[in-house]
Length: 111
Image 1 (cartoon, rainbow, N blue to C red):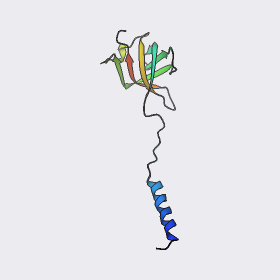
Image 2 (cartoon, one colour; image 1 turned 90 degrees about the vertical axis):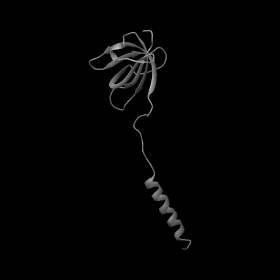
Image 3 (spheres, one colour; image 1 turned 90 degrees about the horizontal axis):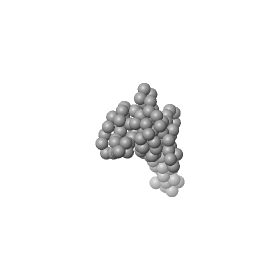
Image 4 (cartoon, rainbow, N blue to C red; image 1 turned 45 degrees about the horizontal axis):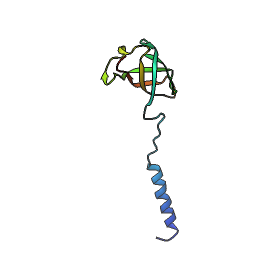
């Protein structure tokens, strides 16, 4: 092996390393965002919550899905247990297209 073939071999090894490297990219954050707010209205037909926030920003409307977890304190409850005026913590994702959707909704235990 002569000295002129060494850079070619290193170049081929680097090229192969780049070809087989994992280049996965996510279109959204893998973790959900958290927001604390008050439920202004609930549309059970469209599965949509309208929320307001005292301090931090957050989505005004959040959709829920069949797999959205709903809790009153630490106890799982159906979505029908949510009431207007209740203080909630919402964990949500915001897709590129469509409304933000909740993955978990925690309602204050005494409402």
